Image (cartoon, rainbow, N blue to C red):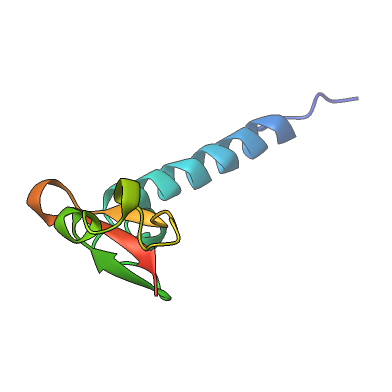
Length: 86
């Protein structure tokens, strides 16, 4: 019997997985995948953005008199907003 020549199956599988990981990393760092940057500038549907000054009217930085906590915090510095349920 002759010994099989060429690449083994495990080498091909490892190369394919490495290629997929490389493509995903390129997409992430080039900004092509919206999954990693969605919602950084806008509040999700069903919520409204409130500034820290607006939250001062409510107890303990909550969104309303019932004490509902913000769903998400977006922005940074002076553009920081808290996403409160509508």
